[in-house]
Length: 419
Ligand SMILES: Cc1cc2nc3c(=O)[nH]c(=O)nc-3n(C[C@H](O)[C@H](O)[C@H](O)COP(=O)(O)OP(=O)(O)OC[C@H]3O[C@@H](n4cnc5c(N)ncnc54)[C@H](O)[C@@H]3O)c2cc1C
Image (cartoon, rainbow, N blue to C red):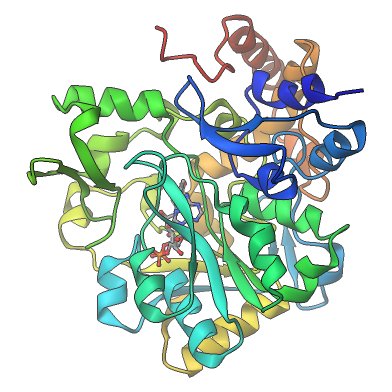
Protein backbone atom coordinates (compact mmCIF):
# COMPACT_ATOMS: atom_id res chain seq x y z
CA UNK A 1 0.00 0.00 0.00
CA UNK A 2 1.25 3.50 -0.82
CA UNK A 3 2.82 5.17 2.20
CA UNK A 4 2.97 8.71 0.81
CA UNK A 5 0.79 10.23 3.54
CA UNK A 6 3.28 9.18 6.23
CA UNK A 7 6.10 10.65 4.13
CA UNK A 8 4.23 13.93 3.61
CA UNK A 9 3.60 14.24 7.35
CA UNK A 10 7.23 15.40 7.71
CA UNK A 11 6.54 18.48 5.58
CA UNK A 12 3.05 19.03 6.95
CA UNK A 13 4.47 19.22 10.47
CA UNK A 14 7.02 21.82 9.31
CA UNK A 15 9.96 19.49 9.85
CA UNK A 16 11.37 19.17 6.31
CA UNK A 17 14.60 21.15 6.03
CA UNK A 18 14.85 20.67 2.25
CA UNK A 19 18.24 18.90 2.32
CA UNK A 20 17.36 16.69 -0.66
CA UNK A 21 18.57 13.37 0.78
CA UNK A 22 15.22 11.60 0.29
CA UNK A 23 15.19 12.68 -3.38
CA UNK A 24 18.73 11.37 -3.76
CA UNK A 25 17.71 8.04 -2.18
CA UNK A 26 14.64 7.61 -4.44
CA UNK A 27 15.46 9.47 -7.68
CA UNK A 28 12.66 7.87 -9.72
CA UNK A 29 10.01 8.82 -7.19
CA UNK A 30 11.02 12.05 -5.46
CA UNK A 31 12.45 15.29 -6.84
CA UNK A 32 13.19 18.60 -5.16
CA UNK A 33 11.01 21.47 -6.38
CA UNK A 34 9.88 24.87 -5.20
CA UNK A 35 6.59 24.34 -3.32
CA UNK A 36 3.79 26.96 -3.26
CA UNK A 37 5.16 28.01 0.16
CA UNK A 38 8.38 29.08 -1.59
CA UNK A 39 10.52 26.41 0.10
CA UNK A 40 12.44 23.64 -1.69
CA UNK A 41 10.53 20.45 -0.91
CA UNK A 42 10.53 16.83 -2.17
CA UNK A 43 7.65 16.22 -4.58
CA UNK A 44 6.51 12.62 -5.12
CA UNK A 45 5.75 11.39 -8.63
CA UNK A 46 5.00 7.79 -7.60
CA UNK A 47 3.78 5.71 -4.68
CA UNK A 48 6.26 5.14 -1.84
CA UNK A 49 6.34 1.74 -0.17
CA UNK A 50 6.36 1.31 3.59
CA UNK A 51 10.03 0.21 3.40
CA UNK A 52 10.96 3.32 1.44
CA UNK A 53 9.23 5.61 3.93
CA UNK A 54 10.89 3.72 6.80
CA UNK A 55 14.30 4.26 5.15
CA UNK A 56 13.57 8.01 4.94
CA UNK A 57 12.31 8.15 8.54
CA UNK A 58 15.60 6.58 9.68
CA UNK A 59 17.70 9.47 8.32
CA UNK A 60 15.46 12.53 7.85
CA UNK A 61 16.63 15.54 9.93
CA UNK A 62 12.95 16.38 10.42
CA UNK A 63 12.62 13.33 12.64
CA UNK A 64 16.07 12.50 13.94
CA UNK A 65 19.35 14.35 14.41
CA UNK A 66 22.53 12.82 15.75
CA UNK A 67 26.19 13.63 16.28
CA UNK A 68 29.46 11.81 15.62
CA UNK A 69 29.29 8.03 15.27
CA UNK A 70 30.44 6.49 18.58
CA UNK A 71 33.47 4.86 16.95
CA UNK A 72 34.85 8.33 16.14
CA UNK A 73 34.82 9.42 19.80
CA UNK A 74 38.19 8.34 21.22
CA UNK A 75 40.42 8.99 24.23
CA UNK A 76 41.58 12.28 22.67
CA UNK A 77 37.99 13.61 22.73
CA UNK A 78 36.60 15.91 25.42
CA UNK A 79 32.81 15.79 25.65
CA UNK A 80 31.28 19.15 26.57
CA UNK A 81 27.62 18.97 27.55
CA UNK A 82 26.64 21.89 25.27
CA UNK A 83 29.36 21.83 22.63
CA UNK A 84 29.68 18.06 22.20
CA UNK A 85 32.85 16.22 21.22
CA UNK A 86 35.96 18.39 20.92
CA UNK A 87 39.53 17.38 20.12
CA UNK A 88 40.89 20.89 19.51
CA UNK A 89 39.63 24.46 19.04
CA UNK A 90 41.63 26.92 16.94
CA UNK A 91 41.26 30.44 15.69
CA UNK A 92 42.13 30.18 12.00
CA UNK A 93 41.88 31.69 8.54
CA UNK A 94 42.79 30.80 4.96
CA UNK A 95 46.43 31.49 4.12
CA UNK A 96 45.40 32.56 0.60
CA UNK A 97 44.38 36.25 1.02
CA UNK A 98 41.83 36.03 -1.80
CA UNK A 99 40.11 33.07 -0.16
CA UNK A 100 40.06 34.81 3.21
CA UNK A 101 38.54 37.93 1.64
CA UNK A 102 35.92 36.19 -0.49
CA UNK A 103 34.82 33.63 2.12
CA UNK A 104 32.02 34.00 4.66
CA UNK A 105 34.27 34.48 7.70
CA UNK A 106 38.01 33.75 7.38
CA UNK A 107 37.84 31.07 4.69
CA UNK A 108 38.79 28.19 6.99
CA UNK A 109 36.36 25.80 5.28
CA UNK A 110 37.56 26.88 1.84
CA UNK A 111 41.18 26.34 2.92
CA UNK A 112 40.42 22.83 4.25
CA UNK A 113 38.66 21.96 0.97
CA UNK A 114 41.56 23.36 -1.05
CA UNK A 115 44.03 21.31 0.98
CA UNK A 116 41.99 18.10 0.50
CA UNK A 117 41.93 18.58 -3.28
CA UNK A 118 45.56 19.67 -3.60
CA UNK A 119 46.84 16.79 -1.47
CA UNK A 120 44.77 14.25 -3.38
CA UNK A 121 43.07 13.07 -0.17
CA UNK A 122 39.75 13.91 -1.84
CA UNK A 123 38.98 14.01 -5.54
CA UNK A 124 36.00 16.33 -5.05
CA UNK A 125 34.05 18.45 -2.60
CA UNK A 126 30.26 18.31 -2.42
CA UNK A 127 29.12 21.68 -1.12
CA UNK A 128 26.73 24.52 -1.93
CA UNK A 129 27.02 27.30 -4.50
CA UNK A 130 24.75 30.27 -5.16
CA UNK A 131 21.68 29.81 -7.29
CA UNK A 132 19.42 26.94 -8.21
CA UNK A 133 15.67 27.50 -8.33
CA UNK A 134 15.96 31.13 -7.13
CA UNK A 135 18.89 33.60 -7.02
CA UNK A 136 18.64 33.62 -3.19
CA UNK A 137 18.86 29.80 -2.93
CA UNK A 138 21.84 27.47 -2.81
CA UNK A 139 22.42 24.51 -5.11
CA UNK A 140 24.69 21.46 -4.79
CA UNK A 141 28.07 21.88 -6.40
CA UNK A 142 30.78 19.27 -6.95
CA UNK A 143 34.12 21.09 -6.97
CA UNK A 144 37.34 19.50 -8.17
CA UNK A 145 39.77 22.42 -8.24
CA UNK A 146 40.60 25.62 -6.38
CA UNK A 147 38.62 27.86 -8.74
CA UNK A 148 35.35 26.04 -8.19
CA UNK A 149 35.96 25.58 -4.43
CA UNK A 150 36.45 29.35 -4.19
CA UNK A 151 33.43 30.10 -6.38
CA UNK A 152 31.24 28.33 -3.78
CA UNK A 153 32.74 30.16 -0.79
CA UNK A 154 30.39 32.22 1.36
CA UNK A 155 27.30 31.28 3.35
CA UNK A 156 24.05 30.54 1.55
CA UNK A 157 21.27 31.66 3.87
CA UNK A 158 18.49 30.55 1.52
CA UNK A 159 16.94 27.10 0.91
CA UNK A 160 19.72 24.71 -0.25
CA UNK A 161 19.61 20.99 -1.07
CA UNK A 162 23.23 19.75 -1.11
CA UNK A 163 22.24 16.13 -0.47
CA UNK A 164 20.13 15.80 -3.62
CA UNK A 165 23.49 15.21 -5.36
CA UNK A 166 24.82 12.70 -2.81
CA UNK A 167 24.05 9.34 -4.42
CA UNK A 168 25.23 10.46 -7.86
CA UNK A 169 28.59 11.29 -6.27
CA UNK A 170 28.70 8.04 -4.30
CA UNK A 171 28.10 6.24 -7.61
CA UNK A 172 31.34 7.74 -8.98
CA UNK A 173 33.22 5.66 -6.42
CA UNK A 174 35.87 8.33 -5.71
CA UNK A 175 36.78 9.84 -2.35
CA UNK A 176 35.15 13.18 -1.63
CA UNK A 177 34.54 15.55 1.29
CA UNK A 178 31.14 16.91 2.22
CA UNK A 179 30.43 20.47 3.41
CA UNK A 180 26.85 20.88 4.57
CA UNK A 181 24.75 22.18 7.45
CA UNK A 182 24.77 20.29 10.76
CA UNK A 183 21.33 18.75 10.10
CA UNK A 184 22.41 17.62 6.60
CA UNK A 185 25.54 15.97 8.00
CA UNK A 186 23.51 14.10 10.61
CA UNK A 187 21.34 12.68 7.82
CA UNK A 188 24.41 11.38 5.98
CA UNK A 189 25.94 9.92 9.17
CA UNK A 190 22.66 8.04 9.72
CA UNK A 191 22.59 6.93 6.09
CA UNK A 192 26.10 5.57 6.66
CA UNK A 193 24.68 2.96 9.03
CA UNK A 194 23.04 1.20 6.08
CA UNK A 195 25.07 2.52 3.09
CA UNK A 196 28.72 1.40 3.40
CA UNK A 197 29.89 3.74 0.62
CA UNK A 198 29.34 6.70 2.99
CA UNK A 199 32.12 5.49 5.29
CA UNK A 200 34.28 4.26 2.43
CA UNK A 201 34.14 7.36 0.20
CA UNK A 202 33.44 10.46 2.31
CA UNK A 203 36.83 11.48 3.64
CA UNK A 204 35.65 14.32 5.89
CA UNK A 205 32.40 15.88 7.08
CA UNK A 206 32.76 19.68 7.36
CA UNK A 207 30.14 22.19 8.47
CA UNK A 208 29.43 25.83 9.07
CA UNK A 209 27.99 26.20 12.59
CA UNK A 210 24.39 27.07 11.74
CA UNK A 211 21.76 29.22 13.42
CA UNK A 212 19.27 28.54 10.62
CA UNK A 213 18.55 30.00 7.20
CA UNK A 214 16.23 32.71 5.98
CA UNK A 215 12.79 31.45 4.92
CA UNK A 216 11.45 32.58 1.55
CA UNK A 217 8.89 34.88 3.22
CA UNK A 218 11.75 36.52 5.18
CA UNK A 219 13.70 37.14 1.98
CA UNK A 220 10.60 38.56 0.26
CA UNK A 221 10.01 40.87 3.25
CA UNK A 222 13.67 42.00 3.18
CA UNK A 223 13.46 42.77 -0.56
CA UNK A 224 10.12 44.57 -0.12
CA UNK A 225 11.56 46.71 2.74
CA UNK A 226 14.23 47.82 0.29
CA UNK A 227 11.83 48.44 -2.59
CA UNK A 228 13.20 45.53 -4.66
CA UNK A 229 10.92 43.41 -6.84
CA UNK A 230 12.01 39.74 -6.40
CA UNK A 231 11.50 39.20 -10.14
CA UNK A 232 14.19 41.80 -10.84
CA UNK A 233 16.87 39.99 -8.80
CA UNK A 234 19.49 38.31 -11.00
CA UNK A 235 21.95 37.23 -8.27
CA UNK A 236 22.24 37.46 -4.50
CA UNK A 237 25.20 36.79 -2.24
CA UNK A 238 24.75 36.93 1.51
CA UNK A 239 28.28 37.52 2.72
CA UNK A 240 31.91 37.40 1.70
CA UNK A 241 34.32 40.07 0.42
CA UNK A 242 35.06 40.99 4.03
CA UNK A 243 33.68 39.55 7.25
CA UNK A 244 30.78 39.28 7.08
CA UNK A 245 30.90 41.52 3.99
CA UNK A 246 27.84 42.92 2.25
CA UNK A 247 24.62 41.18 1.29
CA UNK A 248 24.84 42.01 -2.41
CA UNK A 249 21.79 42.06 -4.66
CA UNK A 250 22.46 42.32 -8.39
CA UNK A 251 19.44 43.32 -10.43
CA UNK A 252 18.66 42.26 -14.01
CA UNK A 253 19.33 45.88 -14.99
CA UNK A 254 22.92 45.42 -13.80
CA UNK A 255 22.43 47.69 -10.76
CA UNK A 256 24.09 46.44 -7.57
CA UNK A 257 22.57 47.07 -4.13
CA UNK A 258 24.64 46.40 -1.01
CA UNK A 259 23.06 45.92 2.41
CA UNK A 260 24.81 44.99 5.65
CA UNK A 261 24.52 41.72 7.57
CA UNK A 262 22.66 43.60 10.31
CA UNK A 263 20.24 45.10 7.78
CA UNK A 264 19.49 41.57 6.58
CA UNK A 265 19.22 39.80 9.94
CA UNK A 266 18.98 42.44 12.67
CA UNK A 267 21.23 42.17 15.73
CA UNK A 268 18.85 40.20 18.00
CA UNK A 269 19.01 36.46 17.17
CA UNK A 270 15.71 35.85 18.97
CA UNK A 271 13.95 37.98 16.31
CA UNK A 272 15.45 36.26 13.24
CA UNK A 273 12.99 34.97 10.66
CA UNK A 274 13.73 31.22 10.55
CA UNK A 275 12.05 28.07 9.25
CA UNK A 276 10.19 26.22 12.03
CA UNK A 277 12.66 23.31 11.92
CA UNK A 278 15.54 25.73 12.50
CA UNK A 279 13.76 27.34 15.45
CA UNK A 280 13.51 23.98 17.22
CA UNK A 281 16.90 22.62 16.07
CA UNK A 282 18.60 20.32 18.61
CA UNK A 283 22.11 21.06 17.32
CA UNK A 284 23.38 23.86 15.11
CA UNK A 285 26.92 23.40 16.44
CA UNK A 286 27.65 20.56 14.02
CA UNK A 287 28.24 17.63 16.33
CA UNK A 288 28.14 15.24 13.36
CA UNK A 289 31.08 17.01 11.69
CA UNK A 290 34.78 16.22 11.79
CA UNK A 291 35.33 19.99 11.70
CA UNK A 292 32.85 22.82 12.37
CA UNK A 293 33.68 26.46 11.58
CA UNK A 294 31.97 29.51 13.01
CA UNK A 295 32.07 33.24 13.54
CA UNK A 296 33.57 34.70 16.71
CA UNK A 297 31.44 37.75 17.35
CA UNK A 298 30.91 38.57 21.06
CA UNK A 299 27.19 38.24 21.78
CA UNK A 300 26.56 36.50 18.44
CA UNK A 301 26.41 39.48 16.06
CA UNK A 302 28.99 41.82 14.50
CA UNK A 303 29.18 45.50 15.44
CA UNK A 304 29.17 48.25 12.80
CA UNK A 305 32.91 48.66 13.43
CA UNK A 306 33.62 44.96 12.83
CA UNK A 307 31.56 44.97 9.66
CA UNK A 308 33.71 47.82 8.35
CA UNK A 309 37.15 46.40 8.99
CA UNK A 310 37.28 42.75 10.09
CA UNK A 311 39.42 40.64 7.69
CA UNK A 312 37.77 37.50 9.15
CA UNK A 313 38.96 34.80 11.52
CA UNK A 314 37.04 31.58 12.16
CA UNK A 315 36.78 29.60 15.30
CA UNK A 316 37.38 26.03 14.13
CA UNK A 317 36.19 23.10 16.26
CA UNK A 318 37.79 19.75 15.40
CA UNK A 319 35.47 17.10 16.80
CA UNK A 320 37.12 13.87 15.66
CA UNK A 321 40.72 12.70 15.48
CA UNK A 322 40.41 12.80 11.68
CA UNK A 323 39.20 16.40 11.90
CA UNK A 324 42.03 17.47 14.21
CA UNK A 325 44.58 15.81 11.93
CA UNK A 326 43.07 17.53 8.90
CA UNK A 327 43.39 20.94 10.59
CA UNK A 328 47.01 20.18 11.49
CA UNK A 329 47.92 18.91 8.01
CA UNK A 330 46.22 21.86 6.26
CA UNK A 331 48.17 24.26 8.49
CA UNK A 332 51.44 22.43 7.97
CA UNK A 333 50.94 22.43 4.20
CA UNK A 334 50.40 26.20 4.25
CA UNK A 335 46.66 26.31 3.45
CA UNK A 336 45.38 27.34 6.87
CA UNK A 337 46.84 29.89 9.31
CA UNK A 338 46.34 28.98 12.98
CA UNK A 339 46.01 32.05 15.19
CA UNK A 340 45.64 30.88 18.79
CA UNK A 341 43.08 28.86 20.66
CA UNK A 342 39.65 29.36 22.19
CA UNK A 343 37.60 27.77 24.97
CA UNK A 344 34.04 26.54 25.28
CA UNK A 345 33.38 29.65 27.43
CA UNK A 346 34.33 31.73 24.36
CA UNK A 347 31.95 29.65 22.26
CA UNK A 348 29.15 30.30 24.79
CA UNK A 349 29.82 34.03 24.45
CA UNK A 350 30.02 33.99 20.65
CA UNK A 351 27.03 31.69 20.07
CA UNK A 352 24.44 32.37 22.81
CA UNK A 353 21.59 31.41 20.44
CA UNK A 354 23.10 27.94 19.95
CA UNK A 355 23.35 27.39 23.70
CA UNK A 356 19.77 28.54 24.37
CA UNK A 357 18.28 26.46 21.57
CA UNK A 358 20.06 23.28 22.62
CA UNK A 359 18.89 23.62 26.22
CA UNK A 360 15.27 24.30 25.21
CA UNK A 361 14.91 21.68 22.48
CA UNK A 362 13.85 18.71 24.66
CA UNK A 363 10.94 20.61 26.23
CA UNK A 364 9.93 21.89 22.80
CA UNK A 365 9.73 18.31 21.49
CA UNK A 366 7.48 17.43 24.41
CA UNK A 367 5.31 20.35 23.27
CA UNK A 368 5.24 18.95 19.72
CA UNK A 369 4.16 15.55 21.00
CA UNK A 370 1.50 17.02 23.29
CA UNK A 371 0.18 18.88 20.21
CA UNK A 372 -0.14 15.54 18.37
CA UNK A 373 3.01 15.87 16.26
CA UNK A 374 6.03 13.63 16.02
CA UNK A 375 8.99 14.76 18.14
CA UNK A 376 12.61 14.84 16.94
CA UNK A 377 14.83 12.02 18.21
CA UNK A 378 18.32 13.16 19.21
CA UNK A 379 20.55 10.13 19.89
CA UNK A 380 23.90 11.17 21.34
CA UNK A 381 23.05 14.87 21.69
CA UNK A 382 22.46 14.90 25.50
CA UNK A 383 19.11 16.63 25.01
CA UNK A 384 17.61 15.27 28.26
CA UNK A 385 20.62 16.30 30.35
CA UNK A 386 20.66 19.80 28.81
CA UNK A 387 16.95 20.16 29.49
CA UNK A 388 17.62 19.76 33.22
CA UNK A 389 19.43 23.12 33.16
CA UNK A 390 16.01 24.80 32.95
CA UNK A 391 13.88 25.29 36.05
CA UNK A 392 10.38 23.76 36.05
CA UNK A 393 8.68 27.03 35.17
CA UNK A 394 10.91 27.70 32.14
CA UNK A 395 10.55 24.09 31.01
CA UNK A 396 6.74 24.35 31.13
CA UNK A 397 6.90 27.71 29.27
CA UNK A 398 8.89 26.03 26.47
CA UNK A 399 6.38 23.17 26.21
CA UNK A 400 3.42 25.55 26.16
CA UNK A 401 5.17 27.93 23.76
CA UNK A 402 5.69 25.14 21.23
CA UNK A 403 2.06 24.04 21.57
CA UNK A 404 0.71 27.57 21.17
CA UNK A 405 2.82 28.16 18.09
CA UNK A 406 1.55 24.95 16.52
CA UNK A 407 -2.04 25.91 17.42
CA UNK A 408 -1.71 29.14 15.39
CA UNK A 409 0.03 27.37 12.51
CA UNK A 410 3.55 28.78 12.99
CA UNK A 411 5.00 25.39 12.08
CA UNK A 412 3.47 25.47 8.62
CA UNK A 413 5.66 26.24 5.61
CA UNK A 414 3.20 28.89 4.40
CA UNK A 415 3.11 30.73 7.74
CA UNK A 416 4.19 34.33 7.25
CA UNK A 417 3.47 34.17 3.53
CA UNK A 418 -0.27 34.41 4.12
CA UNK A 419 -0.19 36.97 6.99
C1 LIG B 1 22.50 28.82 7.04
C2 LIG B 1 23.72 29.24 7.81
C3 LIG B 1 23.59 29.71 9.12
C4 LIG B 1 24.74 30.06 9.86
N1 LIG B 1 24.60 30.43 11.17
C5 LIG B 1 25.72 30.67 11.92
C6 LIG B 1 25.64 30.93 13.32
O1 LIG B 1 24.56 30.90 13.92
N2 LIG B 1 26.81 31.18 14.00
C7 LIG B 1 28.02 31.16 13.36
O2 LIG B 1 29.03 31.39 14.00
N3 LIG B 1 28.13 30.90 12.06
C8 LIG B 1 27.00 30.66 11.33
N4 LIG B 1 27.12 30.34 10.00
C9 LIG B 1 28.46 30.04 9.51
C10 LIG B 1 29.22 31.22 8.98
O3 LIG B 1 28.35 31.99 8.18
C11 LIG B 1 30.38 30.70 8.13
O4 LIG B 1 29.85 29.86 7.13
C12 LIG B 1 31.39 29.88 8.86
O5 LIG B 1 31.98 30.71 9.83
C13 LIG B 1 32.44 29.33 7.93
O6 LIG B 1 33.13 30.40 7.40
P1 LIG B 1 34.29 30.19 6.33
O7 LIG B 1 34.83 31.52 6.00
O8 LIG B 1 35.20 29.12 6.81
O9 LIG B 1 33.44 29.62 5.13
P2 LIG B 1 33.81 29.60 3.58
O10 LIG B 1 35.28 29.40 3.43
O11 LIG B 1 33.15 30.75 2.92
O12 LIG B 1 33.10 28.26 3.14
C14 LIG B 1 31.74 28.06 3.35
C15 LIG B 1 31.44 26.66 2.88
O13 LIG B 1 30.12 26.31 3.29
C16 LIG B 1 29.37 25.91 2.17
N5 LIG B 1 28.00 26.40 2.39
C17 LIG B 1 27.57 27.67 2.38
N6 LIG B 1 26.27 27.73 2.62
C18 LIG B 1 25.86 26.46 2.79
C19 LIG B 1 24.60 25.88 3.04
N7 LIG B 1 23.50 26.60 3.17
N8 LIG B 1 24.53 24.54 3.16
C20 LIG B 1 25.63 23.79 3.03
N9 LIG B 1 26.86 24.29 2.78
C21 LIG B 1 26.96 25.61 2.66
C22 LIG B 1 30.02 26.54 0.97
O14 LIG B 1 29.79 25.79 -0.18
C23 LIG B 1 31.50 26.55 1.37
O15 LIG B 1 32.11 25.33 1.05
C24 LIG B 1 26.00 29.99 9.24
C25 LIG B 1 26.12 29.56 7.92
C26 LIG B 1 25.00 29.16 7.21
C27 LIG B 1 25.15 28.67 5.79
